[in-house]
Amino acid sequence: MTAVALALAASLTWGFADFGAGVAARRAPVFVVAAVAQAAGLVLMTLIVVANGDSVPSLRHALWAVFAGLAAVVGLSAFYRALAIGTMGIVGPITATSSLVPLVFGLARGERPDALQAAGIALAIVGVVAASVERLPEGRRIGAGVGLAFLAAVTFGCSLLGLSRAAPGGLAWAILVMRLTATPLIALLALGFRSTWRLPVAFWAGLVAVGLGDAGATLLYGDASTRGLLSVVAVLSSLYPIVIVVLGRVVLSERVARGQLAGVAVALAGVSLISAG
Image (cartoon, rainbow, N blue to C red; front, top):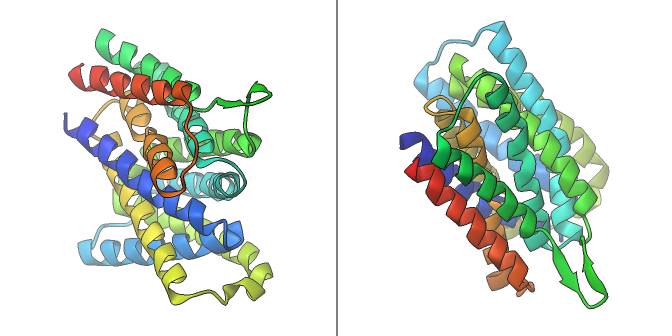
């Protein structure tokens, strides 16, 4: 049950952080938003590693963390851009399919969720897919930014898989190596947008909060992945789009169709079954 609680907490934290990043990406270039957020997370993880005095991970665990960091660069860039040009309530649920990557990996390694958990996983996946379809006057279609959202889903899934494999060597170190890999690359891309750095202090403070939230959620996910089945933890931690859908409706007044709300309800039912299992 601890793994379930940690994974759900990771989802909630990621939801708030990603919503904040999506709002910021509508005012500043994606790479600038990602660079500041990643830098804030890097500082936090450095302080945690120094405070804990953890031993350096093995080369194998470090390489998995580097892989996770490289995948995160592509995923964050695609995801933040998709949030900026599309409807958050549509883009968010699509990225939740990222759980399929570690889910398939866990099953391939022999993990076997019980019947209730298997049903819950199926419902959660169906729910987030249903929540991604937008009904427009000309008919039902996929909204703007969906291609980028699917790219983000695949790369996020690879990043989650890499982190779960690196975490046994030291969770804080794994996330620090991820940030050390991702932050310089994103910062280099952000240097081309120097003219946009003249924004209010409150904007930058918000980006720092996004980065700290993202790092905190990553810690929660990594801890959960070492305590429970990866196939279960991955699905639960990918429910953050529900938070994005709700915040998009409440804060930005984005339209959420009944079918999307039904998808959210189905996903939550899946969470209940996984928890019961």
